[in-house]
Picture 1 (cartoon, rainbow, N blue to C red):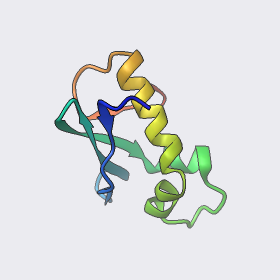
Picture 2 (cartoon, rainbow, N blue to C red):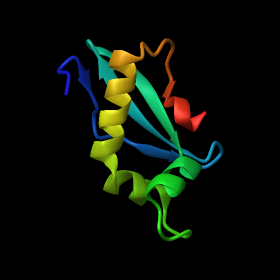
Picture 3 (tube, helix red, strand yellow):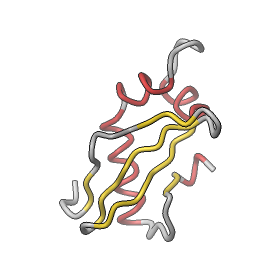
Length: 87
């Protein structure tokens, strides 16, 4: 993983937007990443009643890797960041 992109462990659940918000630090600047509960459920979920925050935490490393690659290679423009497949 690129050392200029780091993910502090401070995720939160936003029920109004049905997503998980977690911070990303890029070259010292703090921004946010969003991943929808629907994306988490479709990609990783097995139990429809599972809490999306628990689902995120269980798959955090994979998601961070995806976001780092997206930010680094795909030239994500403006924060907050969302994966192209989760828009």
